[in-house]
Image (cartoon, rainbow, N blue to C red; front, side, top):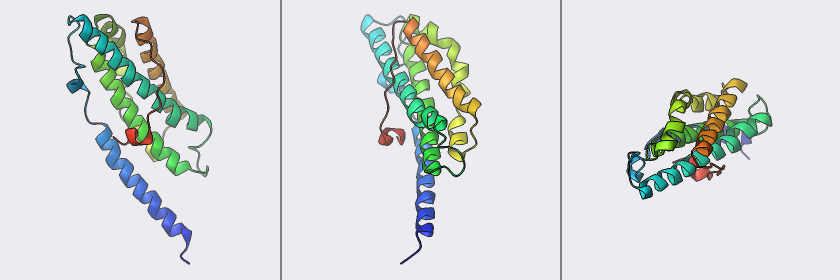
Length: 180
């Protein structure tokens, strides 16, 4: 009977390779084709759809961040030697890239509603700072400050949405959604 260690290493290598490929794919589209780039002076229907899309994208980013980054970090799953550490780090890396992508789409969606656009505009710099955190998470190099940065940006986006009448609730994406 073959030793389980080489098989386990092979599985981990395969999962990490897939994660790298999928993370790159997850950073793709910006949801402009879905009508998120409408001008704030658009019709009432366009503005309503802009808010709906904003809420959906921001909710997915919030759900992914909490489910696969904040919660496992607080449970100690990213610590060296923790059971399932490598898998938790891979999922966190995917979730980080996914959350960044959905936040960028949400900001683009917000452009279709004047009030929402003004509320979200100051957050773009904070969202841009999250760009490379998915990679840090996947490599196991993320600190408490990095995890806190994700949580802070998500909370700021939720608050901005709430102030513009677009209440964001966490929506945990499926693992297949994380992969693109």
